[in-house]
Image 1 (cartoon, rainbow, N blue to C red):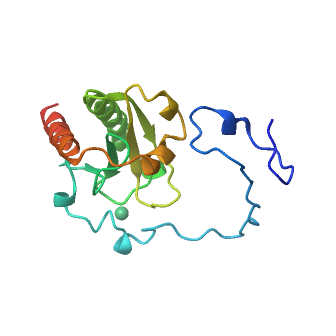
Image 2: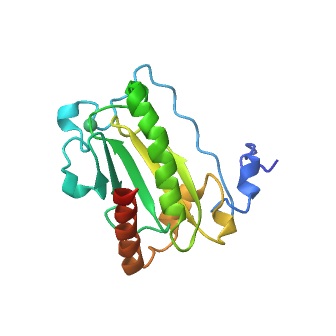
Length: 181
Ligand SMILES: [Zn+2]
């Protein structure tokens, strides 16, 4: 167990090869817990960015779901976001929605994993920022072993953006894949 300069214990993961930072690390002091948490983005459906987006903003849509990419290339080869068409969070899903989420999750993982240069696809839903359900699909570049695991979202912001031409071609491939399957 390492310690920072103040003697606070640092978690073992700071020594993992996948941890993006090195040098002298210090723990932040914890904020006091709040009694009432602030609203998330789009808690009021009238102000929800997802509900306010048109299908033209998405890569693929059907009657109940929409899939979009990021507005521009990032450090990972592909990041997609799956959303419900209507203003729902994970716990609000009907049995039908929940079943479709399972099918779509597998389909999106398979589609992204079939891209050249993708080693693994991670699936995440945090739910702390957006009130509208967003399930993230994050592709790890093949062979980049130090991107394995939970710090990959940090590496997405650290690595230089991937080649835009290939990224656009991959988005077109994914749109076609989703329309065909
Ligand atoms: Zn919404």
